[in-house]
Image (cartoon, rainbow, N blue to C red; front, side, top):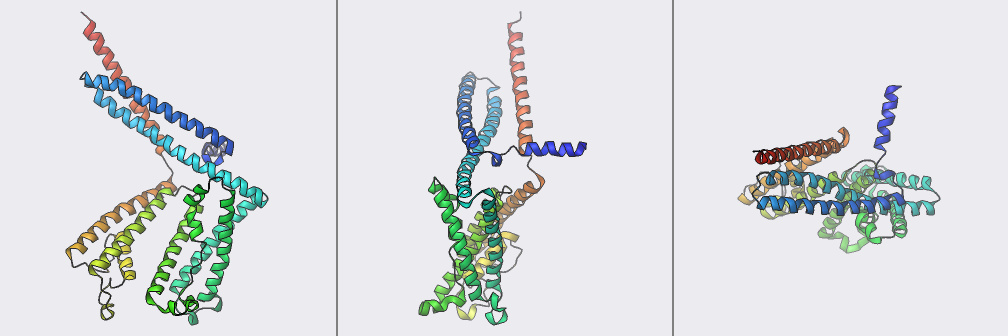
Length: 369
């Protein structure tokens, strides 16, 4: 019974989050957060004037106090800034969800729509990966050919676009929707596979167009993964993971472009000899270099520029993989930042009191005969 009571008590504390705030509560808390930021700024200015005067008077404790206060105020400022950003996002999302629930006939129908969209994203992501890796249509079941997958994709895109338009019409700030849900719009546009190139006539026979189309499908595949993480963000905090993936993609594309320019060779007779002879192979080399730190051993650059590029990608990959792993560990293990900040703040407060006590004792000693 005691364990159950303790679990329920902890659950009550965990329920105190911005996700459980109503629209009115969010608006009030947002105003008070901004007021707290203004009060903190005035407090920082006040302490700065005092410490600046002590520093000009050659007080040896002024520098130490300034460092401690900077650490403390920076922690509080980061907390208030992140809280304000989270409250703004929650306010707009809550406003959109309330209006969508009214149009759909209740919150239950809205939840059904959201879970349905998430299911379609996962299913369609699997179909697109299968379509790009399964090979020719004569080796597949009839309902998994490129043409069938394209029609399934187009049908799902109608649902995706309808959900995006509904969200857009329910939003008071259209800018917020385009800023935070532009991926929803991008993934709502179907991209035909190579089997669908016949509908473009002679244009579809051009190799460059086929490569661009394939690149668009890869980009759409990434956007689907990104949209799925947006849905998961309602369950867990994946903002840092999303930033890590975004920078990883940028580093991979940049590395592929430069290695292709430096050591790529598009000649037909050298396609097998040079592992980075095409941009697609260069992307694979760059991806393995960033992810594995160069242990993929696909291509060993021969030029000095290529070797420098490889070293930069290895260093960037080490940082990004480390951040991604740390973020994933934080999600599953649990965040301890608040407890650590409280402990740090308590230690800094005691240090300030100790410094003030020393100053008081020094003044009393100097005043004694």
